[in-house]
Amino acid sequence: MEDIYAELLHKTAMGDQLAFKKLYEQASPKLMSVCLRLMKTEALAEDVLQEGFIKIWDKADTYTPGKGKAMTWMSTVIRNKGLDKLRSLKTKPSETEIEYEGIEFASTELKPDDLEDMSQDIQGLMVCLNKLKPDQKECILLSYYYGHTHQELADKLGKPLGTIKAWIRRGLEDLRPCMN
Amino acid sequence: MHELKSTPKRYQNPEVFELLAMEYAVGSLQGRARQRFEVLMDTHFYLRATVDAYEAKFANLVELLPEKQPSNQVWNNIEAHIKESSASAAKGTSLEEEKTPWWQMNFFKQGFGLAAMALIISAVLVYNPMTDHNPNAVASYSAVMESDNNGETIAVTKIQKSDMKLTIDIMKPMAIADGMELTLWCHPRAGGKPMKMGTISKSGKTELNISEQEWKDLQNVGQLAVSVEKKGNSNITSPSEKIILKGQLSSAL
Image (cartoon, rainbow over all chains, first blue to last red; front, side):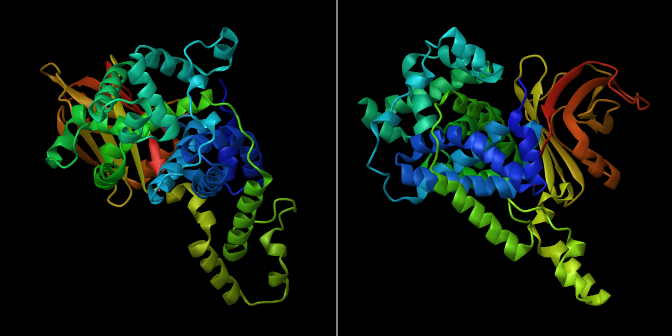
């Protein structure tokens, strides 16, 4: 699949502000979704999205195709901004909108039409994740999408902390050979 | 979870650091453990390179998310920030206006002398963030080298402008036949003849000096590769034997 964002990112790196605006228009709805799940409230999510895109503008020249697709690079920049922000907050936002709690969108029961729209990279990753035990997969996805700590996962899933740590560690150990 | 307080040598064990890198990339490594790992990433480039590789792989998960339109205010704030930066650093022009060539600016029409012009150009070159977008601003390159057989991480390569050295660290010793040696290659993205970087050790670190021309050519390189070659076969200009390791080259400021 052609990387539609890479060319815009390349132009952004050359200081082309129109290309950057187009990049924002096309990529921000997906990246806003990343921010919402991490930050829980729209206000904080928009703060992170804004700071993240300013970093993308500043650092666009450090992106190379060797770092993966442009969208994966941008989502890593944005997500790390979100994790930094969460770390800087003394307490996580308690106000959580219910629609940003589950992982139904990453369900294993995706329709063939959905799969057709997906890149080979995500299809491959889903194959690897679907080989894990359901609990391991759930913990890893909740960590990724929501930035939950081990303790938060233990509270959320009603399991002992040690169990959560073991699920994640073993899940990642099982994922490693498949992802490589 | 693997504790980070134990001996630093543990970070040189791929079994340990790769799992920590995965935990970092997933986000389950948090709090002080995450901070300590970030400190280690600053000093051990192979940790950073491994994290980068896993972050790129896990970031594909974003594809599954439903889209959510942010409010217009977000772009307005970003645009205002860029304009402000542009005004203070002469980085660019308005999004809606045609860019005005610098030589047509009123400033230059008012008859300032050459000395003033040279001073301004020097200042812009030094302070203008546009210089950050210059490929010459790249400070280092790195690549995680994986086995061509099973994709296992075997080595990490870093090339630094500061000392003009290429360092390759083979973390899992390679078993190669007597009379054979390992050779490192840089393959251009556009194809064509690879750059032969030199012979490397089958275990531990090897440092190779690189020339100015090689540093310049690295901006066109897409992939590094290690081949097994007959010892003393120094005349080869491309891999003549089996490629056993491969890795994508990434740049960093």
